[in-house]
Length: 194
Image (cartoon, rainbow, N blue to C red; front, side):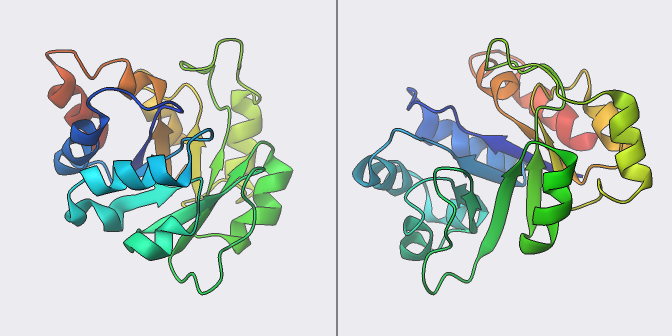
């Protein structure tokens, strides 16, 4: 099961150190999602990261940077929904319904389905699916290894994500709320070992 970390929407102190550290600990991919950032701000962040990280980074904004920096991929969403010319990398997409998963799954390398649980980073953004709906979607083949669970995912419920047949889990609030914790490394390793 893949473990993907999504950055906070705003730039935070020390982010340029946390991103490579997460990858060194075994996180599969880091999605750089900064909806209000300029191209220059995103380029500065990318320039501050070691080049070995690039093939494990996905951008949600200023998608042309993916070609320029030889990043792993791009993430399509409502703001950015067109693949840049000559892009050959990985493509992922956001989905907010099971019907949307059925439509988009074949057009992408993987899709995010959210919110699976009550969001940690977005107050009032609650789960949109019952466990029964998700279980049925797994049995019908809608949820499979190309579908990544997003929204409220943490160590407390990652086993449920796995049991429901998701190909991975995307984490945001749970990770970034812990970066100053003394057990941060152990926590990340425990997610990956599951």
